[in-house]
Length: 70
Image 1 (cartoon, rainbow, N blue to C red):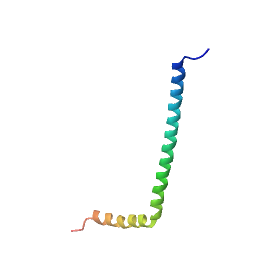
Image 2 (spheres, one colour):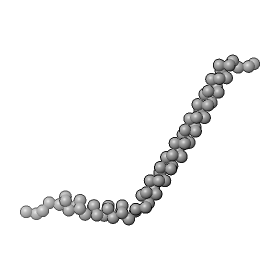
Image 3 (spheres, rainbow, N blue to C red):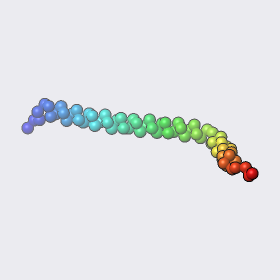
Image 4 (cartoon, rainbow, N blue to C red):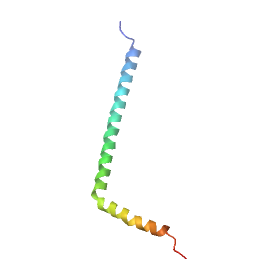
């Protein structure tokens, strides 16, 4: 027995929506991966600067927190 037009149309619309949703999730995953790789490349360009800044900041913090003896 043939399905009524509305049911076939509704099923096709639902299927298209699900396919669109899968495509959007896939696209978002690709964009997230691209952004992550860009960030890692930017960070990877200057690892010595990050380490240097960390070590320079550490002694300054400890000096500021120490109170002079009176």
